[in-house]
Length: 318
Image (cartoon, rainbow, N blue to C red; front, side):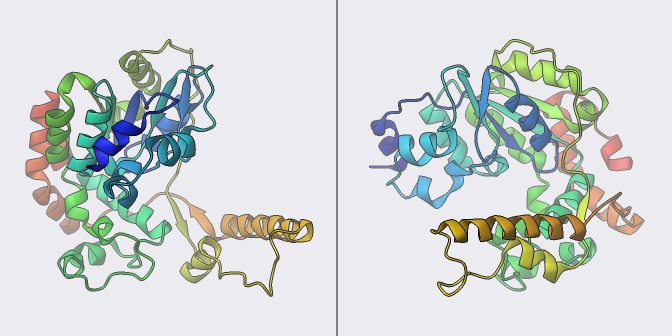
């Protein structure tokens, strides 16, 4: 039995999500997810990005939709919030994941957020550094390593998926939007251009609510999330994010005393993380690098222009 048919056979006490924010990365998906999660009719997945339909569990043929997906990521949802949503950006890049979702829930709606790949990719690289997927701080150097990394070379030990480091592929937004339209049907997809979201978040948010079929809650405040963050010291950042395993001779987490120690450790980690984090504007791309990216993504930007019915040539020339 295929994974999809196994999932269908299990049934579910809770409904499947009504909508999915599928990407792209660094295009405002976290902010939009946060705003929607506060809506009185919407229950959003915890965490925001389950990545369930791109996980090895979903393709193994053995998952239980009820236990491994619904209860795990939507167990906090009550009947007072009948609309469920999640926001895994990996789905945009996976034909199989999108096909699984559509087969499970043909009525599912998809929100895709887009921006110029020229600026998106630099921001995405910074995010990979923060998540310890990347260890080359210079973007131009990381861009040049793509061919070697495609051969399995120069992959950071902390990188969980080398495909995350194929920056040229991540920026193929026109190709992946076209794929989404083909698999889900254009009427069930709502594309948002990041520039519009930044310029008028209220209007963008209201359109999303209409698309997923919920009442406008009147939200007027749209604080930005996930500013340009970077760490001061990589080694300290790695120790904070992935602390060494505590052996049996260390903190006994099952005891009350151990729980208190764990709480103290977590607070210390947060303080160190706050101190080691720098928030500020990202350095401008050097002109030659910008021109190379614009040339690389020229076809993708033109494809987006055609798909969205708007002139995006300023993304190339800007």
